[in-house]
Every structure is written in structure tokens, then in C-alpha cells.
Picture 1: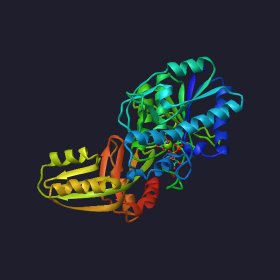
Picture 2: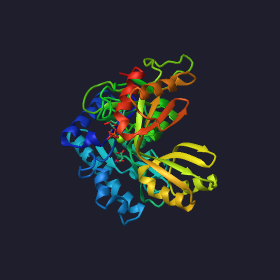
Picture 3: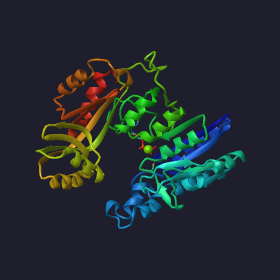
Picture 4: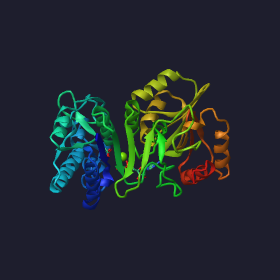
Amino acid sequence: MGIIVQKFGGTSLATPESRLKALAKIIDAKENGDTVVVVVSAMGRLGSPYATDTLLSLVGYKEAKVCNQELDLLISTGEVIASVIMSNLLNSHGLDAKALTGGGAGVITDDNHLAAEVLHIDTNHIRNLLETGIIPVIAGFQGRGPHNEVTTIGRGGSDTTAALFGEALKAERVEIYTDVDGIMTADPKVCISAKIIDEVSYTEVFQMADSGAKVIHPRAVEIAMRSGIKMLIKNTFNDHVGTRISHYNHIDKKYHIEEKLITSIAHRTNRVQVHVEGAMDDEVFFAKLAQEEVSIDIINIFPNRRVFTIDADKKEKALEVIKEHAVSHYFIDNCCKVTVIGERMTGVPGVMAKIIKSLASENIEILQTADSLSTIACLIRQQDLKKSIAALHQAFDLN
Ligand code: ADP
Ligand code: ASP
Ligand code: MG
């Protein structure tokens, strides 16, 4: 049997009981004859002692008076602790395991601390361990920079670590273990009628992740897509078969199983709509926003008027740039973006009309829209989020 990479997320490792569930998945794979590489996230979520957000809170998040390199040193410890604890658990159940930092496992990055780019995976050490029957337990989300310093690769990056090792080791598949049964038609925390999706295309999952669905990191999907690695999203806590991610068959316009025009609805909260009015040099203005790391979304430019959305955390920075240009402006706070996703919608008329009709029937005002080949996004008010997802979910027959 081939190599499989199993990645366990924060909630899958939060308690001794949940770690036993993760252990059972590793044992199952070994008993099946697979060669297993384990990748772990930090244990638990904010409030758990070694979760990434808890570690960041120890130095006051954005008010921290240490540089990004030191922040990397701090937050990388969450995954390191998880790797040793899981290795200890495996060894105490008779399996040979070895905990490794990301850098120790061969993740080589640039020095862009907190958002480092992975340049290369050196698989030598991992291959040596596998050859001697040892299960590597790799701390996700981190690597080694050009001066051997610890780096991290961006929030949610353990999924990316798993996909990168899957690619570099030519693994048979990558299994992402989390706290839901797989990829669902919408976030089950927001939509009670969300249903599990058996099979979905790389492109659609990428669009979902990129549109805010937290279940997997978009970068991990990109890596799996470019290398054609099979990816499964599964629940650590039960035996549900989970979701398979595969290529959509463009010729037959069908998957093996899914036949829906729209496969899912994703959302992103914490958005602010920005209106900027008056004559100015748009090129300079948008370049300055980029320089200040204010990333913009859903953008419409009219003569002497621009409307776009930003993350609420970037509002102060955006305001500074707007003031430099001495133009009038106003913000609409507390917005969110709801995106319907489906590769089959390409070239099919009437999808937008259906969205407008279903939101109008619930008196939900659309503040702005944007679309791509396989997505249509609407900016709405945060208070309308649940209602809008429920309406769209029903309109597109996902219930
Ligand atoms: P992990 O700690 O395992 O990495 P995450 O919190 O990053 O877990 O991702 C799992 C969560 O993603 C789920 O608890 C769920 O609320 C959320 N989620 C958002 N959109 C979806 C979706 N379409 N399908 C499944 N889960 C989703
Ligand atoms: N622990 C990191 C985070 O919370 C990485 C991950 O969980 O994937 O962002
Ligand atoms: Mg995650």
C-alpha cells in the first residue's frame, strides 16, 4: 500500500478523548497496510492552553511589542506541543512514532514571518523514518527560513503542510480530519439544513475555501489540484465516509455522483463596504491601499466613484489612505459576503435572477455583487446572513 498523509485539526486534538479518536484513525490506516505520515495542528481553539489564538493572546495580539519573527517563535509552539503529545500517544500504544518541527521535517520557507511561502519540501528525513517503520508526526503550519529561523505559513496552514507532504511524497491520498462529517452544502454552524457533499471538484472546494468556508485552506486545495493528489475530508469522531475531492468532468458535465447546478454556499463575515467619491488618481489610490496591505474585494469603479469591500480589521488603515486623497467617503459596517458556488453554472442563464428572487422574497437588500465562472457573490448585511443562506439553500435545491 502507498503513503497516506493524515492531518488532524485543532478540535480533533483538543482533549485526551479526542486524541484517542485521532489515534484510532492512525491505527486503522496502519492495520490497512498504509504507510502513514501524520500532520498536526495546535490543540483546541481559543481558550485551550496551547491553541494558536491563546498563544497570541499571551502577548496581546496586535498590541504585541515583539517582531513577527518572535511571534512565529511563539505560535509555532502550539503545533510542536501537539506533535510530541501525539507521538507519545502513538508510542505508548505500541507504534513507533517521532515528533518533528516543520523545519525538522524539511519544510523550507522564505523569511516572510507570519505568512511565509514554502519554497521546498526536503523529504529525505521523512523518507528515512518511513523506511524504518517510524510514523513521522509533523508539526503543521510552520517551516524553516533562510537563516534556520522558525517561520509560520499563515493561519489555517496545517492543511497546507499536509497537502505539501502529500505532493512531495507522491502520497496515495491526503486525509483531512476535522469536527464535521465532510464538506457540506453550507457551514453547518450557520445553516441547519446543510447537507454533506459526497464528491466535489477541486475548483469548487477552492472557491468555497476562498469564499470563507473554513473547512479547508484554499492553498491546500490548490496544491492537491496541481499535483492531482486525492483528498478526503473526514470526521475524526465517527466513521462517516466523508467528502472526496476530485476533478469535475467538463466533457460529460458531471461528477461521478453530484449533479447539482449549485453545490454549495460559502460566506465571509466581518466585511465593510467602502464608498469613495470625488476626482482622484485611482491608480495611485489603489496602489497605496495595496502598500498598506488593505486587500479589497467586490470592486466597482465608476467615473469619480468607487465602491469596494474590505475586512473590518483594515478599516482604520483604509481611512488613513482615503484621507490622504481628500475625497468624500462613507462606510457601511457589519456586512458579510455570501457566495453561491457551482462549476456547472458556467454559461447557464438565470442563476443571478434566482438569487435576486430568493433574497427579495426575504426582504434582503443586496449591497453589491460580483461573479466569476463558477461563483456569484452578494454583499449583504450581517443581520441577514442566516436568512439569506437558508433562502438560497432552498432555492438551489440543496436542502
Ligand atoms: P480544524 O480545526 O479541524 O482545522 P476548522 O475549524 O478549521 O477545523 O474547520 C472545520 C469547521 O469548518 C467546521 O466546524 C465548520 O463549522 C466550518 N465550515 C465552514 N463551512 C463549511 C462547509 N461548507 N462544510 C463543512 N464545514 C464548514
Ligand atoms: N494552528 C494554526 C491556526 O490556528 C494552524 C492550523 O490550525 O492549521 O491557524
Ligand atoms: Mg482548519
